[in-house]
Length: 300
Image (cartoon, rainbow, N blue to C red):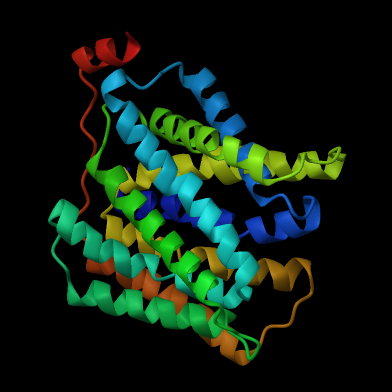
């Protein structure tokens, strides 16, 4: 596939993630964030494992646990803490720092050069998200701020390490490994920290199906596929599509008003995402075909 196609497919993931807030608030029971995260990750991971029939070899178990923690267990937990302790706009703005952190981590871990245009696009994107989401009610709770920054660091590290640790398997299998690991890591936390879930309604089940099958299995396959093909800095910039989608859905579905400042912020974010892709043009890397020996090892 061409690079523009890879970018568009990867951008679908954060665009769909923007629906998470709407689905969570409108279709799922409140007060069970970790339990719902388990139900989002673990069934999707097990389903993909059953479909791919590819388990990680013993040598990869440690890496899979680390990636499952960074991309799902730790990231989602800190995200929920930030969401509860901070106004949504503050939490999302802190999360947008992920793009800047990825650029720095990619330099140290992957040796990727830091380009001025990439830095400027990341800073512009952060500013655009702030204009899009921050309001006069914004407040800074120290624990919430620490969780928001920690979540951005966790996801950034997971993005860079997912690029560094590329197993010789399709992206769908790599996604299955990470989702399953993340769900298993969250499961004991949910059992200890939260009360049992109430009886789920048809609406609840539909919301979980959307978040699990589409918002986890499909989107993270697209995301990890993109990480393998596009420079991490460019991929992380695509993550800023999520708040734009969230605001657009709030306007279309919930009838929420959009101010001129928010519209300007959305335009800045979209422009920054586009410039972020230009900054890394010519640095995409394609996956090599899996050798027969690798297939034998992974199927053993």
